[in-house]
Picture: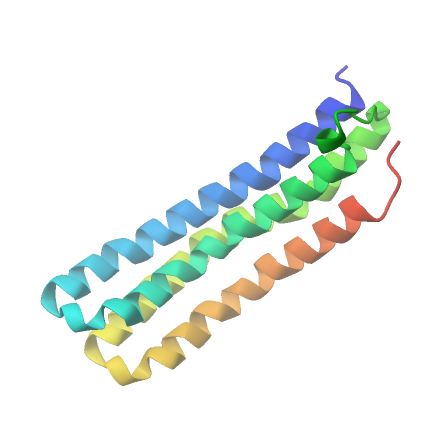
Amino acid sequence: MLSGTAWALIGMGLAVGLSGIGSSIGVSKAGQVASGVISEDPSKFMKCLILQLLPATQGLYGFVIGFVVLLKLNIFSGTLTALSPYGGLAMLGACLPMAIAGLLSGIYQGKVAAAGIALVAKRPDENIKAVTFTIMVETYALLGLLISFIAVYIPNYA
């Protein structure tokens, strides 16, 4: 069986990796639509860019959880904390809300952002509505971040 510290690091990798994948897919979907809109009307660049950037936040949230795990393991002090296997599995579980929410909300936020960019293409003055729709998906990434942060940071997993 893996050590507890290894399980914790796997959890960290999942939080960072899956959130980053979700953001990459979401930003890519929005960017593809934005490129088409901007090829027709370059003046819409900033409105499209704001919408394209929104799915990138999931990757940042995953990075925050990864950083908190590294802090909890004292990796920056040079003295790695040894966790029991159960403590490590618990920290792995604590990372999963961010990993799963980051992956899925990043993908779906990208789809909503792409639809918002299509809205901006036809009705540029409706960009605030498009941003609002896109931010609604962000709520679930924030909930994943919050619960993972609390679950990783507060308990003593040693």
